[in-house]
Structures are given as C-alpha cells and as structure tokens.
Amino acid sequence: MPRQVRRRSLALLSGAGLLLTIAGCGSAPAASGPHNVTIVFASQGLGTEAQATQAAVNSFEKLHPHIHVQIETLSASSNDAYQTLITDLTSGSGTPDVITADVIWPATFAAAKWILPLNQFHPDTSRFYQGMVKSGEYQGKLYAMPWFINVEGLYYRTDLVKTPPATFAQLTSDAKSAMKNNSKLTGLAFEGNKYEGAVTVFQDISGGFGGEFLNAQGKPVLNSPQNIKALTWLNNAIKTGISPAAVTGWEEGNVQQAFLSGDAVFATNWPYLYPLAEASGSAVKGKVAFVPTPVDGGQATASLGGDDLVINKNTKYPKQSWELVQYLTSAKTMTARALISGDPPARTDAYTPALLQKAPWFKQEEAVYADATPRPVTPLYPQISAQIQEALSATYSGQLTPTKALDQAQKAVEAIVSGHGS
Image 1 (cartoon, rainbow, N blue to C red):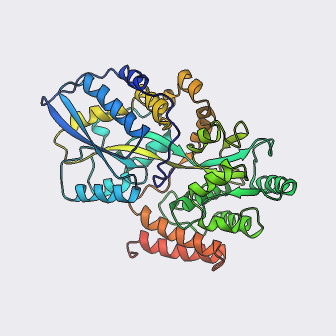
Image 2: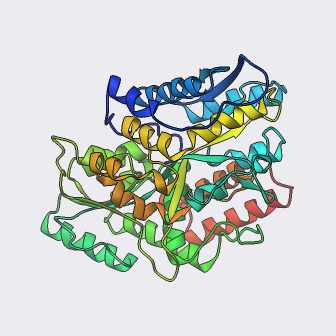
C-alpha cells in the first residue's frame, strides 16, 4: 500500500516466540572494518512492526558483536517521515546510515545524490519480486533493496461472485447482479478521495485497459485512449450507482469498513485487509478472495507499495550498513518478520511452508505480487501524481469529462517533465 496507510495485520507470533524465530536467521560473517561502531537505522513502524525490527536488529548484533544498531523511529505519517529524512540528507549528515524508504522515494534520493548506489556490493536480486527491484533503480544503477512488498488488488465476495471477473464488463455485470438481489449492497468500493490512493487505483484500472502514465521513453501519455477508457469506467461506476457518490471522499479505511461489514461486493485495497477479513468475528470470514484487477486490452496491474532499504551516501560505515541491509533482506529474516508483523516478504523464497501454514492468505496474495507494477520511477513523481489527483478529482466531482481532465493533466505533466513546470 502507499505508505500513507500504516495498518498492518495482527501479530502472528508473540513474546519469546518471535525472538526465537528471528534468532536463527542469517549466517553472514561479521563485518570487517572499525570495531565497536554504531550505525543509525531510521525506520517507520509501530506495534508489531517495531517489535519485528527490534528483534531483527538484536539478532544482527549477536552475529556482528562489533556493530551496534541504533533505531531511529520515524513518524508513522509518510509525509512527516519524508520531511525528517530530507532535512537530514540535505544537511550532509552521515546519519541515519540506513533508511527505510517508501518505494516512490529512492529515485528522488538518488537524483539528489543522497544515497549510495548498491552495485558496488554486488547484490543478488534474482529472488526478489522484480517490480520492487525496479522501484530501487535509477539511471541504470540499483540504489535500494526491497524489504517488504505491498500491492493493490481486487477483493471480492466468493459467496456473491463465483469466479473472479476476467474483464471490466464482467465486473460491472457481477456487481449489478449482486446488487439486484440485495439493494443495500455497494457494487464496488474504491478509494476516490484526492490523494495518492486514488492514483494507485487509477493505475490498476489503466494498466488493465493498456494504459500507462509515462511511456518507455519517459514521455507523458496521460490522455491516451486507454487512460480515457479507464477513467471513464471508474467515473461510470459512480454515475450508475455501482459505487456510491461517497467514494469521492473515500480512502483505504472507508473501503475497509465497507468491505469488512459485508456491504461491498468488490473492493480495491491492499494485503493488510485479508487477515482482517479472515479474523474471528468478521462478517466476511471465509467469503473472501484477492486477485489482480481485470484485463481489457492491457495486462493485469497491481500498483506497487511497500518499503525499500537505502544507505546514506555520507555514512562513515558503508560496509557495516550494507551488512545490516543484507541481513534484513535475507529470506529467513523476511519470513520471521512476516510471522511477527504481517509485512509480506519482498522475495519469493521467504514464503515457506511454515509461513503459509500460519498465514494461508499469503498464498493468494503471492499471485497478485507477480503483477506488481511500480508507479513511474522518477524524481518528478510527486509532481506528476499531484496532477493526476487533480484530474481524478475534477472528473469524479463532475467538473470535467475524463477526456478534458486528462488533457489538462497531460499538458501540466509535459511542462513538468520538460523542466518548465512547478
């Protein structure tokens, strides 16, 4: 999910069990270099996420007795955490040494020359989901290692819809059929507020129709026929009542509430919702499936969220920082983190039988990870996203048609990319 959403599934292990689980992880040799060094690891995460991070660090320190890791806990707010990091990095400070980065941050950090290219450490990325690897690449170099993955997919009620919709027309038909039998149902719950979550939904639908935001040459293609079809389909869902008018103000929490209460047939959301749906007392327990969005001339697209790990260019301890990154991104450590916090591993070999037995929903989620699609990997992405948000908001509110809204966004993003935008 985009990092605005910090909700995670409930802890799957507790107490001493979580420490024992992590204690056996990894077997990297102690780092060479200065003895008794301290590296600062800046990371978001509260509750079970914080517990998982601390447990991993404790285990790392046992394997590397001359390296002490000081955890700097960043704000749970993505925007606030980002601003804190920008202040540190622009000052030229050598700390934090290792940083947890939203998947949309590495390109910005790399373009500003704030983080180290990791190619010098010869990382093996073959076991990682390649969509996440791409989120850490900039101008042919790798600047970030995937830590845990999140992808946006389509939830549906298996008691109301027998098979996942293969096309958008089928999704519409299935939603209408269920609503005909129960007029209180919402056909499609989706995030339509003016924020990043609406952009990821639009990317999911756009990809299914064959659209994209920037082409392979990095040129804006927002007003392509495919994108117009995608936005028209989303807007028609509101206009025809498949989605309530209220979705124009909905974020992940609103979609979660609609789906978990049993009031929605379909919903766009992130993996954290699955264990909540299967929890004791859930109105939809045993009636849920999670799949990629449909395809109509394009390809299955699941907007990529999650976190990467990057290293401060000015760190005094690059080798020791890499040792920590390497340990945290190992398969065993990721598996242990998933068992504790529910954060989905970013590498395929971390989905062990033990993990799938404890958290069987990961099996369905894995199928969606295969279609993980990063948002444009460019330092200009925040500005591009702002223009897409404007277009979506103007369309959903009835101020502009999908074509006119995307035409305006196209012109604005062309100016941004050419260096004349603000």
